[in-house]
Image (cartoon, rainbow, N blue to C red):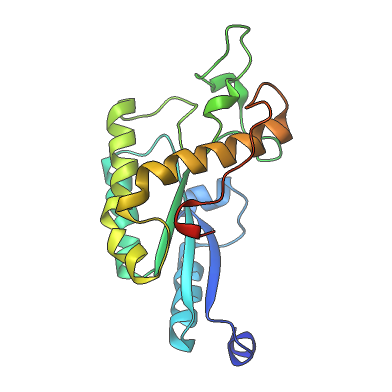
Length: 192
């Protein structure tokens, strides 16, 4: 990271995925939480901003959501982003537990946008989604500070745009019905 910083690296995307060691093992990440903390600290010491993705598991309770928020705050992550764990090919996902289905029993690809739970949630679905969206509200000051398009003003636009992008990817990779002839819009506020 020091070498890349010397030649211009100022922001680095970390696919952290999870802060829980048992999930890191399940996701075959070959690292532990302490190594993630060390990597974030090293980037901060050099002056590299951290953009980090976290996968939110549908089995999270309020406690896991709180621990995730605390981890991000404690480690001063500049710009966190979140997706919901979704079984897709190559990830070892189990389609037997998919609850979002078409009339023919196949998965309903419209919900495979990484922004909707497609497997059972431990919390009531509405409570899970409220906790999930609250993650973006908690970190909205971070998005303003880092110039991210994930600002409070464009949540609805972001949700609509992300759903369209993820749906296009999912239907391309997985096959099935998708938005026919629709082009993917640019992200809100010109971001990426």
